[in-house]
Image (cartoon, rainbow over all chains, first blue to last red):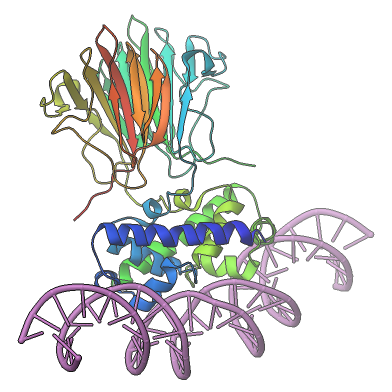
Length: 197
Length: 197
DNA sequence: ATCGGCCGTACGTTATCACGTACAGGCGTA
DNA sequence: TACGCCTGTACGTGATAACGTACGGCCGAT
């Protein structure tokens, strides 16, 4: 089932490996020694004649000083995508005092989603209708643009001032709160984002 | 060689698949039908008793509405890391008219690097000493904070106004230019960041 | 010209992946 | 209780991934 797509991506991996290997100026045997995979196997993989095991693929990636996930990241579409200011997707203006916009395009291959959140004094993200918690493995980076906010993450609190940048596991329960007297805004980068069907 | 690491990550993948499947409330046979892989195979993969082929792994990922690269991204670890405003790493102030700061911590597990670039009128990123081009597979998202910039990517040019957001493959040759009369600043999110040895 | 060394690939063997079927255990219903 | 239905796993078979070895082709050195 869907073997066509599979085959395509598999051969893509192959040429990718070859390109990287040649870019590093390694012979098949060099790479074979680096990663513990036989040279003929590498040759077959590069030519798309076989689909390596995750185990083997991991070793190949490591031999190229890559993580397997990085090696496979050639799938999702290339080119350039622009989202103009007026095209931004607005989040539901549900929770009082909290509004946000998503700045990145809604592509499935998108690895990082950028959004800007504005919090009125005394309000917080995570109200009903807000994006609550992220999928397992998700990771979030937030930059405080204006004002002060408090990050509540997995029970703990972290006070953040203007310009501070915080990174945390987004699959833990979390939300941002604006305690101060002034309006606060922050940029959030969520890297991961899977989706139910 | 390095079979220990392999085994670890492979079994990790397994539990990951199981967690995701259960989170989607699917039985083995449900997922089997969704992705075209037999239920017993899925069971073995989930328990780490076998290392699936890239082909099979791809199908499994698709059955979970994921790209394989996303499924494998469970590597690097967690917690919360804060970079205060005054702790930011400054980029080399080499190129005249271009200065930048890195906002995210220098952790190896970091998936997305956030940086702010300021361009004086008539200048561009990519001068000598600047971060030139990114590793293969890297992907970059940029948000124009102030002024106007032109993205040069792989030969083509893209005019960006204040507030525009652009996403592109960062392993292509690219740089930003500020043509306008005013100073321009932009936030860049680079997701990937691998490293040669 | 000829040899040595390295390149990438074709061959044959073994290990194991992936399948279909068949089984033990839990749950709601008749 | 006994039945049907579903869950997840053990078994045996065919396909194939991965190995080691061996071959033709290319380049530099002697």
